[in-house]
Length: 260
Image (tube, rainbow, N blue to C red; front, side):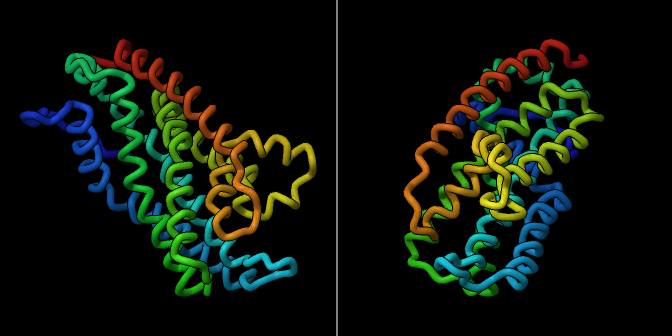
């Protein structure tokens, strides 16, 4: 995202983090190219994959549901990772110097930015699930649909923070190439392009340490008969804690080194 931040004026009675979140959301939604791309790409990929590999295979696996979740995860992952691009522009413009004067705390800053990313990625998830119902023929109880959508959405939190960490620590001209590389690696290890069961043992062990693997696994859980992956919840929580600390440190560094 390349939308420059404008002046922030805190509304009367509105907490600074909430006001900043609304301000950032408004600027983000103005970037129509980013919003449309983050929604259209996973939707198109799902329609293609579901038509090629859809149907129920041996063992009762509904591959249309599997690819529905995988493409929803892939699209939302790309949208979440792109959140750092705007930060790189803000760092270079001297915006962080203004933020430091307002007294906005690093934790509040990260929460506001991550909340905006989560809001922007939600339409991609909803539309992919709608395509699964209409195009892919996925059938499941309403509770499973709601659970799958919410699990996917909540599991995006560490990946949204990861995108912000990249934007805070990496030079502006390097953010986009690094985001692309991370998206490819996380999509591959996350089993978003092909079933993780096809991975070699060593690769699968590494994959189960990544947040993208559990992003998809948790989203698919309501549509399968597998046990709930509590181990995945622990992995996602660990990534969230570590990345939040890195993000807070990165915010302090960016505010200290931002141009006047």
